[in-house]
Image 1 (cartoon, rainbow, N blue to C red):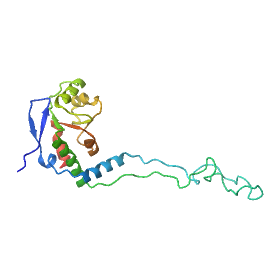
Image 2 (cartoon, one colour; image 1 turned 90 degrees about the vertical axis):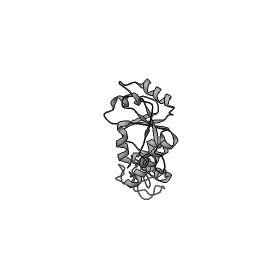
Image 3 (cartoon, rainbow, N blue to C red; image 1 turned 90 degrees about the horizontal axis):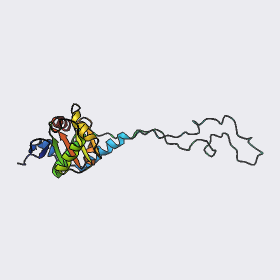
Amino acid sequence: MTAAPKAPLLGGAKKDVSLDAAIFGAEVKPHLVHEAVRAEMNARRQGTRAAKSRGLVSGGRSKPWRQKGTGRARAGTVRAAQFTGGGVVFPPGPRDFSVKVNKKAARAALRAALSDHVQAGSFALLSASAFDAPTTKGAADLIAKWGGESPAVVVVNDDEATLGKSFRNLDRVIVTTPAELEVAEVVWARSLLVSESALDALQRRAS
């Protein structure tokens, strides 16, 4: 029987906490992680790039010159693409870059990303009593003492303002909540820290 994965507890009593093997000891499937990250990155794209065709630009109500006798090629409107200020041939328009990923696959991708951190030893838990007051220096010292590398992602609950304020000003550190945590952020991070109270919410989301 495989032993349950463990993670160190930072900021409290020095000990290792057992984790749910179904969440943090899952099989790492790179193709699912890739699909989830691709979908999340595409969702960030606005897709508002556009240009005007000859039917959308203003002006050009009359012929710029008469049909014959000028020695120039015939032209019906200055809105044509060859004129300055004219429309674009086959112009790009707004588009949706979103890619659908099934919920089951998205949860599996999150479990894989979390399990990869646990296997690499770059996952740790934060004690609820780690900080009595916001202190950026204390947060930096905590990560350094643990041996964590940046960039890092810190996951806290909405009501843990002290923890969030302590880490949010550190360079290359993202502070987020279990509901907003993305697979792309977990993959980007070299260190992943989760508060004890946020662990249950994170496990429910990934299960």
